[in-house]
Each structure stands twice: as C-alpha cells, then as structure tokens.
Amino acid sequence: MNYEGNIIRPPSEANSIILKVTVGCSHNRCTFCGAYKDVRFRIKDAPTIDADIAFAARHCRRQHRVFLADGDALIIPTPRLEGILAQIRQQLPWVNRVSLYGNARSMLRKTPAELAKLKDLGLYRLYMGLESGHDPTLEHIRKGVNSDRMVEAAKRIREAALFLSVTVLLGIAGRSNSAVHARETGRILSGMQPNQIAALTLMPLENTPLFEEMRTGKFKLPDQAGILQELGLLVSAIDVERAQFQANHASNYLPLSGRLPRDKERILQVIGAGLSGRQPLTTESQRAL
Ligand code: SF4
Image 1 (cartoon, rainbow, N blue to C red):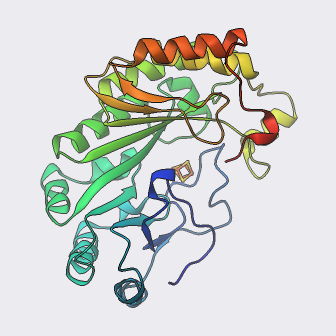
Image 2 (tube, rainbow, N blue to C red):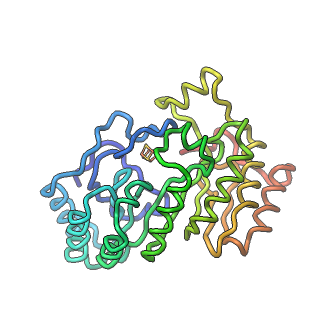
Image 3 (tube, rainbow, N blue to C red):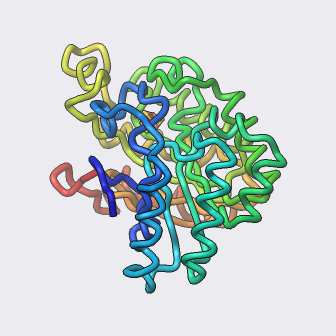
C-alpha cells in the first residue's frame, strides 16, 4: 500500500482496508487539529490508487470493509469517486461497506443525485466532525462552516439514505462556554438526526493553535467534573428519533454507549454516578487520542 504520513481513521474502521485516496485535509485550518498540519492536500493519482486496490485484491481478502482516507475524501470530484467505488466493487467483491470522512462543505458540493449514485456504487457511511453546534465556538476553532450549514449537509446525507456518523468534542468551547456549547450541540444534533453520535474529549495537541491559546491562558479547558457536566447537558439536549451514542473513545473520562432516546436516562444516571464518585473515571494517564 502506498501510505504517506499518519493513518487516521475512526475507531470503528479498525479492521477495514485503508485506501489512502487523498493525502491530508482539504480544509486543514481547524485550530485544535494537528492531524495534517504539515501536509499539503492532494488527491492521489490514478495509477497509485489502482496499485493499492490491486494490492488489496491480492492481500486483503479477509477484510470486508474499506475506509477511504484521509481527512476529507468526499472532496474528490464525483466522476473520480464513482470510478474508485466501481473499481472496489469489481476487484474486491467481498467488500460490503465503504466509508469515508466528509466535511459539511464537501457534502454540500455533492448534489442529491450524485450522492444517490455514490450510494448505488457502494458508499455506505460518512463520518463528519461537527465538534460544536455553538456558532461562536465553530468560528473560534475555524471549522469553516456554521451550524446551519452543518444541519443542511447532514440532511442531504440522510436524504440519500447514507449512514451518518457525527463527532462532537467535549471541552472545545473552553470553560466559559461549556454549558452553551453543550446545549447548542445537542440542539444541532437534533436537527441533523445522525445515525451515530460520537463524543470525544479534547486533548490539545502541541502542534496546534489551540494548544498555544491554552499555554498563554487564553483558552481554559474544563476540568474532569466540568467535562462530565458538559456531557450531561449535551445528552439531555439531544432529541433524536434513533441514534447510537458513543462516548467510549480513549480520550473520554467515563466510557459510555447506548441508543438514544431509549437509553438516555441510564446514560444520565451513569454520568451522575461519575460526578458523585460512585463510578470510577479514567485517569489522565490512561487517556489517549
Ligand atoms: S476538517 Fe477535520 S481533518 Fe480537516 S483540519 Fe478540521 S478537524 Fe482536521
């Protein structure tokens, strides 16, 4: 496989064939993200992608899922993406699910007809980073779109019957905006109606502008109890028809998962137990990205 730089993929793609069809992220401006800071975004050339698919056809016969990396593979022009999906279907017929990261802008660049065609060709799941539904926070972290556009993009994906997984970041609004970030994020998630919600906890990386803000005291991360309170407010504010909720990433203080709305009360009780000390929390040294 022609891998360059970091391989970043969602936890649920741990057993997938990772095809790096792009390098880096087309946006690459989020102040908390150090994933591709020194990488110039590009779409890989066709012979390289062809060679990787041919490699997977020979060596990855036991893996039934493909993840198209890197940070925003949906930005690939539709005819090329259709070609890649068609090749996967033809050369890796045992693959039953193709997933990728897409940001709101890339989603909104695709027409409903294009998304339907991509789904027909095997695209199944899109991972999207909302991070926050609080517009001043989205602006502060230079996410590049506001919350209305996030909802619009999510609706387009859901209308194409694609599976949408949305990530939010606890702590990203700092201490002062923690509560409003939680409530607004819950409200925006309710508008998006994703199939899956993943809540991670911010762990500032040294190579990012946000880390510099933290070092100089401009940004203050909520403490453990503050993060749990934020999580409780977030869960309380989510009103979805049906979504898998996961806060069991290694960055989280309290591993949680369940289905919303069915498990909402149980999740809130566990958060309450974490806050009162009745439920053990992950220590700082055990946390990881
Ligand atoms: S869009 Fe995603 S990958 Fe790109 S800079 Fe922002 S967080 Fe990082």
